[in-house]
Image (cartoon, rainbow, N blue to C red):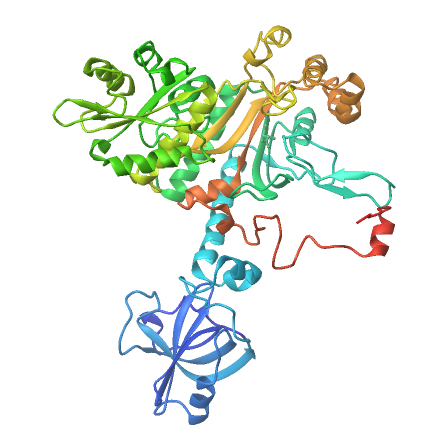
Length: 582
Ligand code: ASP
């Protein structure tokens, strides 16, 4: 027997019982006549004691020699600790060891297995199995398990069936590049790894499954932006005979359930805002609404004076930063530098202070009077003591710059509180997006998303005006889910493909299976997918998804532990009918 209890089990009520524990040597403290060992496993830490009086000399000697991370089995009697540790669940007792067996030695680990380790990110990733022994990582994985269990419990309770879909498939466009897998049995042909199970879940609806979900790996070969993983996990869902409202309600239910069960937080019904509205109010399609600082458009009150920068701008827009009128010139200058960084790209920034004495002070005092500034304050909702920051230029650019500034100010002011949750639905996304470089339209969500009723004709005349039956769930400034009501008839799908630049032949070759299926009584359907990694990170109150993935890849898409990707040998290449010309 390796153990009668875990290292987290023993309490005062166990005093005098004989027990067996197994685990890792966390720490050895040698006081000469007495040796203590902290023994650790997933469940906790228990103190072992060896001393001259009560244990044999031989045992004491052996205990002394144990290196960190050695795996041992210890048996003995539970005794009351002389000095108790109230911070440890097992802190009232210790194990007086009478039997000790080394199960496996450990060489010296490259970093300490402590909550605050001395190991940097790279070394921890290389030895991720040691990193996982540390509480913060271990607890994140346990937390992720709890979230996925709640998801399964809830969706299953709502009648959703988990169905697995294949990983070796044909391209499913979600806007990224495919990872491809060469086929040995079919020379010159390739599978694609799914960017999502999109087409399969739609086919499950044609198959009459009615309510499907899957916690599923998806693969997207993108240049890795910060905190993206080439393989990631989605909670993927689809429902038949539903309208947008049904999907939103079902997944608002799931989100509320998770917030309640996992965080103990009850949230009100989620606000719903259209894409146009969030762009206007927050300059961003995934706004963080835990705090205000909403955009105030100033074109009307700031143009047609003598300030040419504003006069020539498509949009003049500001935010009122609460309580920041006291910022010094120097502090404001650092903000100007911040917005001028290439990542943000603003050309400049105008400020206006709402002083405590009711006067206004601005960097453009020359061009405006106090009455003008009062209008600025009104438009941005500024109060006495606030600082208005104004950007101007082309509408889209300016909005995204001011949105970045809004988030930065919220960060600096401590308004992005990890224990506060402010979800919202963003609805009525544009159906198509113009690729500035190629001049082509592509689907903003994906090509299977249906346009709003009655808007199909608009595709010919004003494609960018067409709105989609598409929606995102946004939580604390992160898009945690997105979905749509789908096209479910062959003709409409064909029209969509045409507008996305597919010839009928191309559409048939790539998506013929789906269009064919639509001819056999496809029910109206729609769905959504949540990004599980991000959702777990947000619920866990942290920003990086990597901390919640057991074996993540680094920023170059590498697994530094197993050293992948890696070359394959010549024979394998030949078998796959691949020739490398490097
Ligand atoms: N397949 C979509 C995605 O991965 C989600 C959906 O439309 O249900 O974003």
